Image 1 (cartoon, one colour):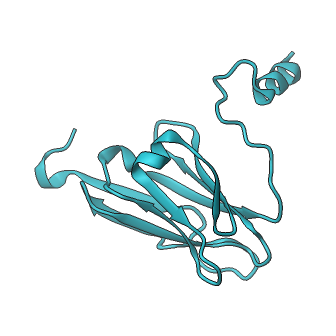
Image 2 (image 1 turned 135 degrees about the vertical axis):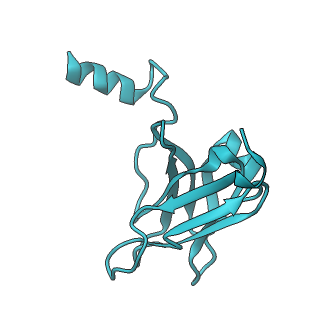
Length: 140
């Protein structure tokens, strides 16, 4: 629920800053009003062709948003398709953009990169997923 001008979206970016061997995210934080665009950049580790974007809301678990290989979107979510865009232009930082911010967008946003793909589990709620089966076998 928004209260006039007091409604804003606060976005934080994990690991923002600059290190030679790490993923770099910019800016370190971003405050936007409702219905504004919000854009964040990610510089993947040199030589990494795969970029992943996740977010973590204060009350929730990590949520997968999108993964890209070079300039191509390889996998994304329904919410991503409706309200977000991402790109990884050659020789430029990758970016994630929220087209029109809402209060529910307040979260930590994470960018990761890798040289090759990794197992991605869409939902831990799926009882037939490999992740759930692995958790059951470890807990048992």
